[in-house]
Length: 138
Image (cartoon, rainbow, N blue to C red; front, side, top):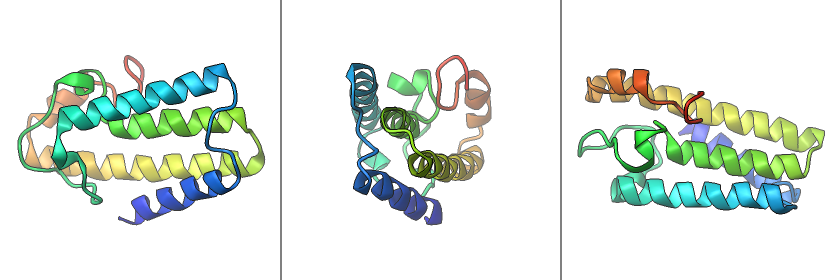
């Protein structure tokens, strides 16, 4: 929960400093695609994707939709959107907030993955064969 609170603070900082939205065709396109990924992931995962704690939900491991390529497409969408905005408005404040927000997401992913392995033993194999946030790379 602390990581979520930190993430919200850093995103709010970027918003208040006009550093969160893209400014040109490339960064806006990345953000639109990030929003599409977020929606696709939410639809695929269903209503159980709406919870604040980084804890697994009942209903089984989801491996369809964007989860076929990325273990954390919702977090990935946030990162893509965030860094596209920062790329459009680079300054020390936006870069620092971006790094801290990314760290908060990394903490949530790590905590979630530990709990997923305990809840769904097949998650370990899924994690070995599926990228965390960047398909085919990371």
